[in-house]
Length: 246
Image (cartoon, rainbow, N blue to C red; front, side):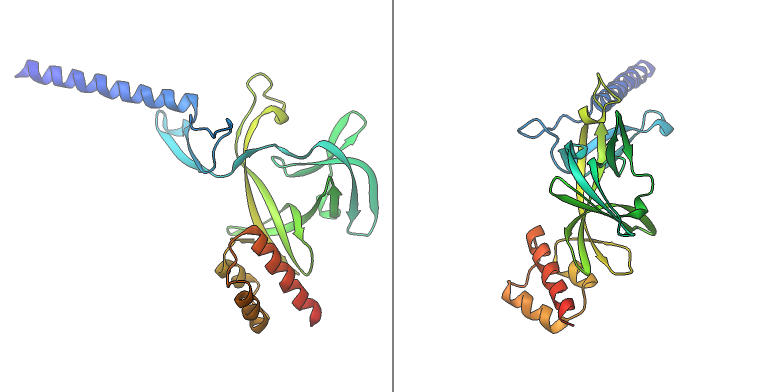
């Protein structure tokens, strides 16, 4: 009987050790699932090591699609309009999503604008960026957004890096790494922090909640739905046109 117990315990320990080693190996090599073109697919579950608890792992959900770290990868001659009305139009610009910075070339250096609060708009390569306060959970933060629909109520796009994997040969070169980029849309009303939006009727009307009769008529005509980014753009543009009429 004692021999049977010893054998059982030994087998259990070997199996447990094999499972643990397999889990550690899986974590070390990273996710295997890729899209057809070799990129990481959206909404991947990625296993990462939790250094605070030894061999345990923390399962995190990283959202987004694989993309470049820069908007304006090849640099574009742009125009900066400051809040005091001054214009700067002799810089080559790009936006760094990871550091949330508008960067410019100065000689051989790449520099960010030291006081982004002074920037009203930064336009380059067909994109316009603004620097805004926004609601993030229970905090008010500041950051750059791409301006999608201008007006009294601005529709803004915020890009966030949810996962990064530096290039193994050039870990310091951000442009060679792989990144998952999540895109989130916000509404910025005058005098208020920007609020995150979801492309559905309930989310939009919770923020843009004036002009009820006009909005109800608009939704009936358009099919009573806001389901895509194009629907959202059209709705915000229409809503702004109502404010212009009052």
